[in-house]
Image (cartoon, rainbow, N blue to C red):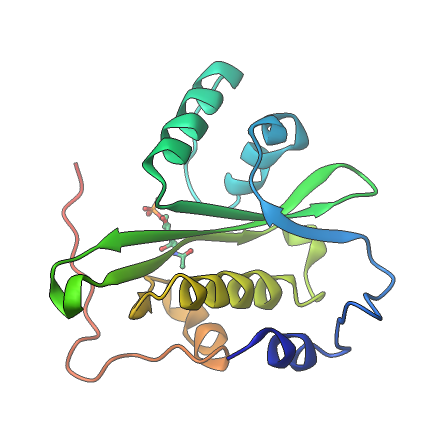
Length: 169
Ligand code: 16G
């Protein structure tokens, strides 16, 4: 997987020379994205709750300080609005030669922007980022209907290990 193959796997492809007609920017989350509708986007994924700007900023700074959160967003720059997001979290290990494991979290694309391959774009971008950070694997949890989507991007159910177990607090 490399950036060229990601660009060309999008139909129509998006290249630096020919970025297409849409005005989408893929970039890291910024502290002022509270005002660009970031929370209104992620509420499409699950419960978010009432988060004040101060709370958002404090959490952003904590994540930044931790150094292992790579919250990546898509901005519709014509409307200054965040319309997609995916988070890469890396986890330091002793196993795998003091390796780094990656997790894909909180993938969401605004449902009014469906059909533009933005889910594919953001997941592949973050997947490449994990590779660049020399993670030895990337894993994710998803609902059953999304299995074909992630399979189409190279993810697989691991034989004998396809169980997610949780304990909710
Ligand atoms: C999905 C997400 C996960 C998110 C969870 C929220 C992906 C690949 N998976 O499993 O990251 O945290 O939904 O659901 O985006 P919850 O509110 O039930 O924890």
